[in-house]
Length: 231
Image 1 (cartoon, rainbow, N blue to C red):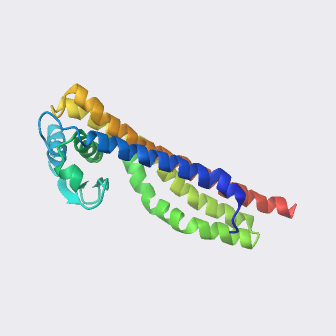
Image 2: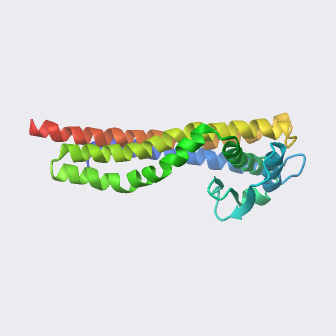
Image 3: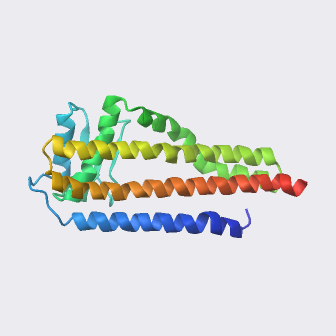
C-alpha cells in the first residue's frame, strides 16, 4: 500500500500522540508512587494474595515475570504474573498494580461476562491483526472492493477486542479500589493514590482503542475509494 498522506494525518500522528502521552503519564505516575510506601508494609504479591483470599479465591498462583509493567493475569492457567518491581515492591504503585491484576482473577472467579467475551475474541482478533492488512492490500491492488471490505471486517475483530477490553480493565480497577480498603490493605488516602496509578494505566487502553478505530476508518475509506475510481 503506497504511503498515503491521509494515513499520516488520520491515523499515524494521532495514534503516536495518544499512545505516547498515555505511556509517559503511566510511567510518570507509577514512578511517583513507587517512592511512596504503604503503612502496612505489604509487598504487591502479598496484597494480591490477601485480596484474593478475602474474596474466597484460593486457586490462583502468583508468580514473578520479567520486564517492566508486564503484569497480567492468565485465565488459561489461573496464574497472576507480576513483574519483579510489583511482586516484591512495597509501594502504593506496586500494590495498586498487583490488586488490579487480582481484579482480573476475581472476574474469572465470578464469571464476569465481558471477560468471557474478550477471551472469545482473542483468536479472531489475532487473525484480524495479522492478516487484515494483506487482504486489504490485495483488494486495492486488484481493485476488488469486496475483498478489501473482507479485510476491513477482519481488522474490525481486532478493533472489537480493543473496545471490549475497556470495560474489562475498568472493572478490574474498580474491584481493586474497593478491595484495597475493604480487605484492609490500604487506608482510604493511600487507596486514592494507588487508584491514580490505575487510572493512568487505563488511559493506555483508551489510546489503543482510539488508534484502532482510526485505523479501521482509514481502511474503510480506502476500500470505498475503489468504487469511486471505478465510477
